[in-house]
Length: 147
Image (cartoon, helix red, strand yellow):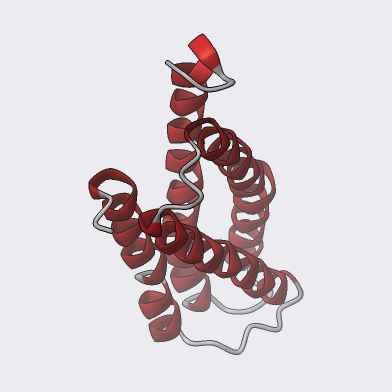
């Protein structure tokens, strides 16, 4: 492989894919936990269990996976010099949207942590679809490179 990564390119690509899968797993699971969390009484034992699950998922899986995805993705882009391609600009825009969703989900989690959630089960069911749609379009941009 060419570029400054040389033979390490495929390793970086593999690490990027692994970190993206981990990040997406968290982005898809956290809103689902929120759905279940809205169904239990505030202050109950089950509510406290959901708080621990949410906090650990966000801090120990989602945050590191997001940072690794960005790091390895930047290395890949610099290696192939795709930053001038139209598909890359589309993917980057959607990736920023996915990162914003990640941060918003973190704010929702913090509201649950202090028993201040004001959103409904239905809200979180719809919110759960946002990372799915973004992921589909990001993958199409990265693989098909439509423009």
